[in-house]
Length: 582
Image (cartoon, rainbow, N blue to C red; front, side, top):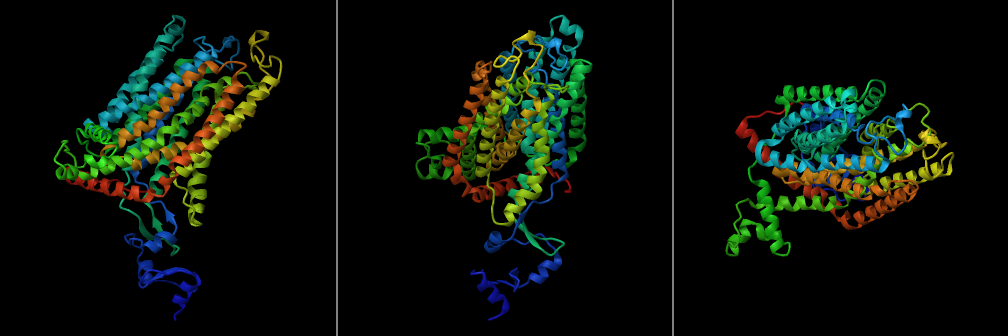
């Protein structure tokens, strides 16, 4: 018996024919020396290699980075503008406190409701943008059209935020009009940018790559898509730091200057979108695909949820009761899409927690000692946490887990996201209790001494709440984007993505419903209730959906096969090339 065979026996394995281990335990093939010397990336992994070799991400195409930058500029504008809805005055006179600016004179409950409406509108409009893209003009053209709508809304906001407009009573009307217009624009962009970035990577299934060190790894499309969305989300949060600049512009110059900056930055994004056109991989819309999807679902509903009835082959064999002008694979793709839709059901509860970060947390900071820090600035702790931890997770934690055989699959990641969000709400409840226990106003902060003195708790105590929400986003929000893309039918990527974004709108509606509880002295119970509800939702989510982890590879492989076929068809029809990779 040779040394390789002995090594295989020592590991207690039965290796596939042609495979063995050397004395050091490394997996070898009959032509391993040839494969390692050539460095080719085209070797398909065997079942044995899929179990043993570490998995890594492929290179990200240039088009992927360009799309991420476009989203950065849009989010810079979005979050730069978001200082307006939460900053209207609470019940005390904020104009007497330059660190707590406000122009509309609304109370905390009304300001919270307005913030939730802004978030609700921005996340319900993606459904409209998705239909336009998937059924009519494609993702790229839809982004261009809705960018124009976005710019119009920015112009309305800037012009109605000048001092004369505020003094003349036009500010509130301008705010509402701009919320509606910008919300429509951001919806059309967001529904399409998220799937467009993943489409830049033309996945061809897992393959072997030999590194310069001689180590052999599996380049995994699932890991690559995960990395793409982590880059995408990192850019989103880098853009969200615009709030730091716009808050200070609001304080030192005025609201109009705080909105002019996002306006200018967004134009840089539009310029990048136009100039980088040759680098983008784009899919051609397939006409009535969404209408066909609803017809399939309707047929299934009429037949006790049996989607097989909607397949053409079933109708041919059973008398053609229904017209089925779609291919067999389309029904299977829709079945995968429904898996994603089921997984999204619990997300609205998560988004209510997320909404606290840009509503009640900001107001909470206004009742604490800021020591010269505007209360809006502290909310950027969440974004900074994400910016720091995404590279740590992507470069260190996830690879280390994969190296020891732990594949942190989507359902597991999302569950952890719920638990971290629950922890954030629990901490916020404790923080609020500290505020109520401190003087001078105790459980009616800013309700005494003419609202001039906050309770004696440092605003930095809030920071862990934001940090925990930020970590939860890495698990729940990024994975939700990834899940929406990988499980969606090839020609319905934007539509399924919009359904995921719609859960944010539903969460905002829930937030509006519970906003009357956002008053003193009820906030401890409000935060505690959210913490309990989110923890229960996380447990229920895991119990109901953990089985999908077992079929993750199978579902994604089927999706890649269908997408590759579609991309080959597009390349043949349009002659479009693909950008380089870095």
